Length: 363
Ligand SMILES: Cc1cc2nc3c(=O)[nH]c(=O)nc-3n(C[C@H](O)[C@H](O)[C@H](O)COP(=O)(O)OP(=O)(O)OC[C@H]3O[C@@H](n4cnc5c(N)ncnc54)[C@H](O)[C@@H]3O)c2cc1C
Ligand code: SF4
Ligand code: SF4
Ligand code: SF4
Image (cartoon, rainbow, N blue to C red):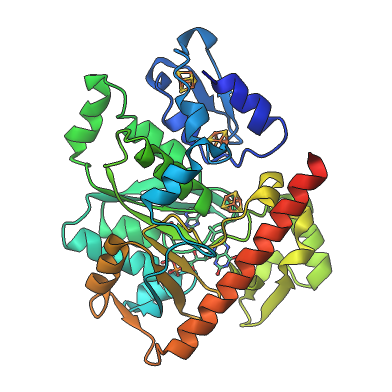
């Protein structure tokens, strides 16, 4: 049976680990202190003697191929971009959501509708705690969901937070208690494609709390860019602006830095390789292919979000929110959505090529 040490050898050491936190969150012995994520999100073994060598951490890791087929079957995955039921271009109706949102605020709009209708008890989102700082949080009120609207670079470690509040696959009744006391048994999770894949793997393994996560809302992802001091300085010099003037950062086809003056600084993503997290260079999922519903800015005009519904649940929550908390673009025509899907397909193929080349280079 392969265990955490094999993950260290096969995933961490070569640099493939993207800190999704799946191994730590779902470690059978997490409640007994076998694994933890350090302050950088790197999983580590804190007490070898607590490991029962069940192999779960290894199997669940999205970098390990063992569960690929089961996970694909679970979500009826098809090439080239996963299952696509519908593509839409939409935005939130509430102007305060629109103002705070990354793109069209559709993620926030759908979460608000789910909460309002009592379909979820909370949502795992990521809130900003300062410039370039973020913190995953379990939002249980509309205010908390709204406060988390927007886009923050750096991985949210949302899974880690889930582990803290939802380490419920362990048979320990004690660990179920906080969740039951809070009444949080139906949660929506917003995450990057790698985080969604880890959730799907535990679903494929039928591990609790996979049924706690009612809906997976995936964000398109070109990569996780590290905005350290050195990197910020380099970008300032490259593009001739000051971060003090920044209003919002976004990624679509390019990195877009919106300044307070209204100007938008655009930097092609291939110029940002120096600040891309190493593990992201090997990742090939662009559009959160395993989510119930996926969101990105690519293919949509400013202030709108491109949405792909992938599962019947994803289609249903989009339809429920439509004309309540969100509205579709007036011209939500096949031509517009077809173009968006084409761009997504191109980006996916590009990400595949890039990941393949990088893997070949280091193997
Ligand atoms: C690392 C990263 C890279 C991305 N790359 C692309 C790209 O290349 N092309 C593209 O079209 N779109 C990309 N996106 C998605 C895009 O930025 C928007 O998140 C998406 O369009 C939804 O916009 P919205 O206005 O509907 O969402 P909003 O209503 O603003 O809600 C966004 C939700 O995402 C959560 N969130 C924010 N940051 C993170 C994070 N780091 N991890 C997990 N959850 C988070 C927020 O808490 C909030 O719930 C990326 C997102 C991330 C996090
Ligand atoms: S107990 Fe199981 S899941 Fe946890 S570290 Fe050991 S092998 Fe991995
Ligand atoms: S499950 Fe996630 S955090 Fe753990 S080793 Fe794999 S990629 Fe890294
Ligand atoms: S590119 Fe995005 S989805 Fe892939 S590992 Fe990096 S953060 Fe995760």
